[in-house]
Every structure is written in C-alpha cells, then in structure tokens.
Length: 283
Length: 263
Image (tube, rainbow over all chains, first blue to last red; front, side):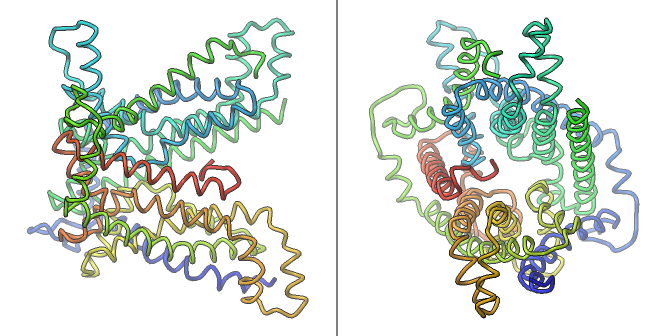
C-alpha cells in the first residue's frame, strides 16, 4: 500500500483530536498569560502575573500539600501493590491469570462509586466504627472521614490495581534461575530480593509510582468527597478558578504547572526504565 | 520466582490485599439490600431501594442522558478510532509526533482536558449541553478504541489484503470485506471499553455540560448525591452502576483474547 491511502483513514480522527484536544490545550497555554478581566472575563493583554501567583506562598503551600499527599499515596500504593504483584507472580501459572483478573477488576468500575464505598466504610455509623463498637470500644472514635488520611486511603484504593499490574509485568518476566544463582552464590532470601530481584523490577515500580502520583496530584474528586472540603489540593483549586472564582487565567496557569510536573515525571520514568533495561543488557 | 517465595507469607499478602480491594465494595452491595436502609443494623433483605430508584425522576433522567452520551460517543469513537488504527498500522513511516497525539488523550489529566474544553467551547460561544459532552468523550474514547484495535492489528496477516488487491478489489472494498471482518472482535472489544468509559466518566462531563439541569449525566447526579452523605438510594444506584461496568468489561475481555483492556 502506498503511504497516501493511510492518510485518508487517519484524517477524521486526527482532525477531531486537533480540534478538540490540541487547540483547546494550546488555548489553555495562552490563557495563562492573559489578564483577568474586571468582571471575571479575560482581558487580552500579556502578563506574567498568573505565573508569578502560582509561586505565592499561599498557592505554593497548596502545591506542596498536594505533592505530599500524592507522594504518600503513591508510596503506600507501591509497597502494597508490589507485595501483591510478587505474591501473584509466585502463584501457579493457571492461578496467576485469575488472581490478576480479580486484582484489576475494581479498577474498571466507576471511580465515584469506589470512592463512595469509603464514605460508607469510614463515616460515624460506618463499618469501621461498627467493628470498633463490636470489639467493645466505647470511647469517642477519632474522626476518620473528611480527613487527610481518608483522602490518602481513597487514592491508594482507587489506583492500587494499576500498581499491581505495573509491578506484575517485570516480576512475571523474571527468570527464576537468576534468583537461584544468587542463592547458590550464598545470597540469603533478603539479599537476593534486595540486590537481585528489586533492581530488575524498578521499571514497574517507577511506572506505578508515577501513575499514582500524577493522577493524585491533579485529583479533585477524592479530596472533595473524602476530604470533605477541609483542605484544598491543586485539582480543587483549578476547579474553583473555573467554576466558582471565575479567574480562568490563573486556573490555566495552575494547570500548566500540573502538566509540567506530569511531563517531568514521565520523562524520569522513561529514564528509569531505559536505565534498567540497559543494565539488563550489560549483564 | 516460585522457589524463592514463602507460601504462607504469599497467602497472607494476597488475602490482605483482596480483602482491602473487595470489602468496601461488598459492604456497599450488602447495604443496598438492607431493608431499613441504615448502615448500622441489618433489618432484613429487601429490593425496595432499587424500586425507589426507578421512581426517582432525576435519576432516571440522568441515566437516559448518560445512555445517549455513551451510545453516540461510542459509535463516533469506534469509527474514527478503527480507521485511525488501520491508517497508523499500514503507514510505513512511524512518526513520533503522531504517536504522541494518539497517546495523549489517555494520559492527559482529566481535569486539564476538562478545563481546556470548557475554555474552548465558551470562547467560541458554543451553547453547552449533551452534544458538547459527546464531542469531548469522543476525544479519549477514540484513543482507547485505537489502542485496542492496533494491538490486534500487530498480529494481522497482511497477505490477505494483498490477495484481495491482486484480485482487483478496490481499497474500500478490501477494508470493508476483508480487514473489518477479521478485526471485528477487537473493534467490538474497543467499542465496549469506550462505552463503559463514557458511562462512568465524570470530570469532563461535569465541565462541558453547561449550566442546564437537563444535561446532567448519571455520574454528575451521583456526585451531587454523595456530597450530602450516605443514603440507601445511592447504595442501590452504586451497586447497579458497578455491576453494569463490570459485565460490559468482562464481555470486552472475552472478545479481546482474555485480556482486560490496558493489560
């Protein structure tokens, strides 16, 4: 086939993506450099004020807070997800497919519903409080819902299946003879894991971490529902600029930083993956 | 791998992780059948909360809107995404830029695409409503359809296309009568995936729906209801929504050679 025919096939989709993704995203890029109009509109004069405002201590604080929550969620999700992936990869091949299927299944159901499930679990009359009472705990329980911990639990819960999937990929490809070689050379179980298995599965860990971090830092649904509006994350801030505060240029500037963080992390992840595969080739 | 693992420890890890993943969902399902509707006490099995849902006009209206959005955006995305996949896979040159454009809708944070589309539509003075949600959903849906179809095309036997061309069939006929029938399971798997993504999508719909009450979709309705706390109706609604997505995805997975999309 000539190279011109495929172009006709691709044109409708590419036109669609250009009109409704590329152009709108470029628009956001431009919007960040315009002034906010007096009545909430946009004044088309160039300014760096919005970009500068992102670094204002108030907003920089929200950025750091979001990064902290995203980082914490990603770390916890990676620890649990890696352990789960390791256990799945250690099962018999027939079981592996089933276990993996059920580990990923929740990921493909509604995000709001999965988050709501934790409201049911954590509220004052919820299951966790019920179990505490049943165990004979009579004092006032610490507040669980509408806290930072609730947001972290929600994020870990929602993104855990992806981490399991990301970590399973390199773990399942691992050649068992390598671990055996390490043991034959006198490496104990822990040493074998730390010095042999872990370094070879770094790409999965990096992918899982970056994914959870990126999705968490821009998230506004989970903080709104499980954080109960007690504190703001960048996602909520962007949301507010567009739907309540009506400061679109500032909202655009904030999202530019979100994209910058995302691209930076994705680059790091590619780098980690390439380094790991490079190391494997050298062996 | 197997020889290094301590079986008891592995079993403990798996039980803990699956308990963490499935207990919250199971509690939700159980409560949706609780007659009293309260999470604290089990007062007997009942499906009355499900009945309640069907008498709620707001919820039924939102469900209908969601269905309209999902059906139309899936049809559009399936056509565009499949053509795109065939186009990309038959091209000899592989463009890095092209790959980025096709991959981008799957990794752009929802909120960024949502505000970008909101700004775009309002600067063009578009009246927003169900149609703008549909247009927006096609963006990410076509990317997912494309990736499912492309995965299948990698193992496609192109010699049958050559055979068809040699026998004198024009290209559109070859695509329609040779390529498409072979690719059909992957195309349907992609369409089912797009359909559930669209059914469940909240953030982009929320931003591109406009102000009117009549363009509220089910996830938007659920979000509004959840903010006011736990009610037995939401439990029932949540159970239905979750079951529907899981069934459709299980179907998609069967068609897609036993792989879950994204796997």
